[in-house]
Length: 215
Image 1 (cartoon, rainbow, N blue to C red):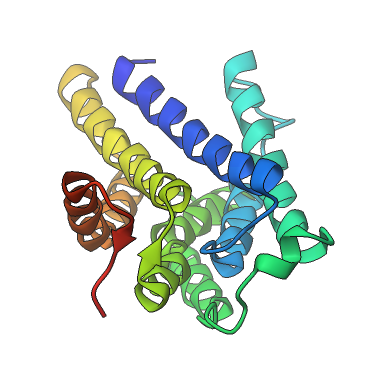
Image 2: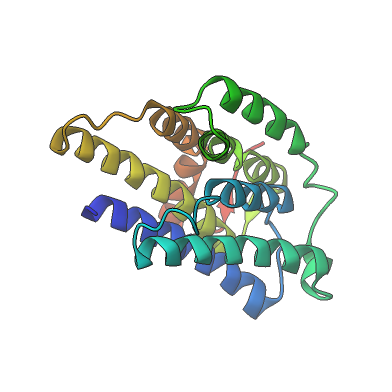
């Protein structure tokens, strides 16, 4: 494992820790899209179908378990916790996220590396992850004034994907025959979706104020 992939994994983990910290300590999920969290839960559940049949390393299995447990825990908190769920703004979080699932599944059935259940689901998870952030970005656009923890959560999610792209570039030039078009294209699409958010995030840091996104 190279330093860029490790940094990407740690950045991804940090984004989840920030979100769990916000939910567990402040007992609030204000500004967080349940729709995006449900999509991420589907992403991890379908990507890690081979977790108990294809052992790679303790690190790999451990990270998979962490992402699975954390994603479903966040959904549970936002749906079931008697205090946290009160702060969820369902009137603003209205993106029809399930309409993203079917196109991604159809695309995975057509474009995949091998037509097997695990490979199709792996491709599906990549396509879905690329657009899973859309409900969150739409929610940020609607609320416009975002607290620091929510802004940091979304920032580190975007940074994780950007670091993974650097990892792919590094592996392309250092490993023979390393070509994986599906994760490359999905990752680029996902990173581009963050571009507008990144711009206003850095502006807010410069102005030392809460993140405010113009309508």
